[in-house]
Amino acid sequence: MAEQQEQQDAAAAPNPDDALGYEHARDALLDVVRQLENGGTSLEESLALWERGEQLAKVCQRWLDGARARLDAALAAEEGAPPGEK
Image 1 (tube, rainbow, N blue to C red):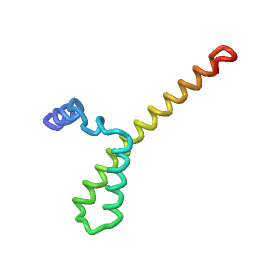
Image 2: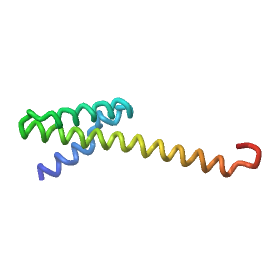
Image 3: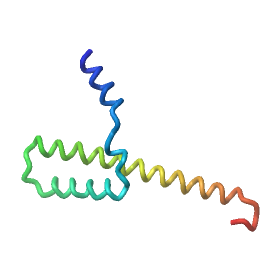
Image 4: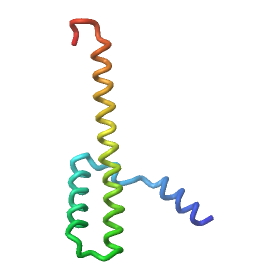
């Protein structure tokens, strides 16, 4: 029961990563990758870095998906425009 409440609380809490712009999230992800590649961290630190990297990758993917949707919508609107208005 307590575990279910924790999951609900986590789902209801705002994710601070959602406020990150694409470039900021990408740069933070690159930093995480560099730290993991350099090694020298404990297993616990490596796992925390990996989890952070997964979060940042999801933020980047949401931005890219949104950009793709906007491009697709713009192209669709352009294709639906009367001739000469492109």
